[in-house]
Length: 193
Image 1 (cartoon, one colour):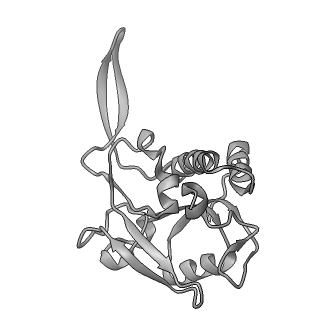
Image 2 (image 1 turned 120 degrees about the horizontal axis):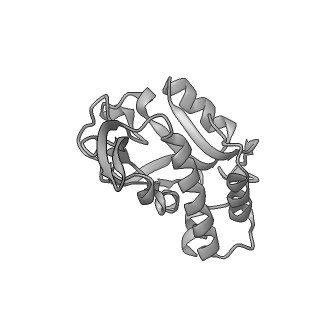
Image 3 (image 1 turned 90 degrees about the vertical axis):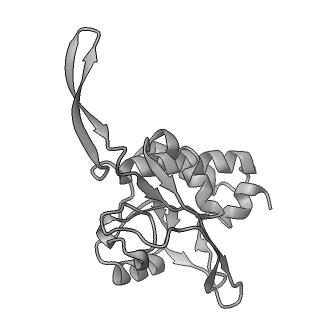
C-alpha cells in the first residue's frame, strides 16, 4: 500500500474530506487526487518503447509509452469516474471498461449492476480490477482516494502482489460501511444526489 507523501495529495484529500465542499469542488478534488495517484501508480509500470526523434538541433534517443499495450482502466461506478477524470492526460494509451456495484445498506454486501469488462484479460494486462478474468495480481494497480484496514487486509489476503495507491488510510469502518472519518458517500457527493 502506497500513500504518496506529497503536499498536493494531502491538500486534495483535505478538500474532498470537507463536508462544505460543493459537488463541483469535490469532483475537482477527486480528479486531481486521481491524477496524482495514477502518476504514482504508473511510475515504474507503464510499457515503454525506445526510439529516436529529430529535434530542431539533432537527433535524441527517447522513451515512449507503448501504444501497442494499452493500460486497461476499470473505474468502479460512480465515484471511480471522478478519480479517472484527469487520467487521460497521463495515460496516452489506455482502454476504459466500467463496472458498477450497489451496496446493500443492511448487509453491506456489494452486488454488480453493470459489467462492461471484456470476456478475458491476458496475464500481462495492466488492469485496475478483476483477477478472475485472467490478469495477474502483480500487474494490477488499485487507485483509491481513501481506504481502511479491513479492505486492505481482505485484498492482501486474496490477491498476493496487488499494489494499492491511496490518498490516505483511515482507521476504521462504521456499522453502515463508511470509512471514518472518510469522505462520506463519494458518488452522492460527486454528483449531488
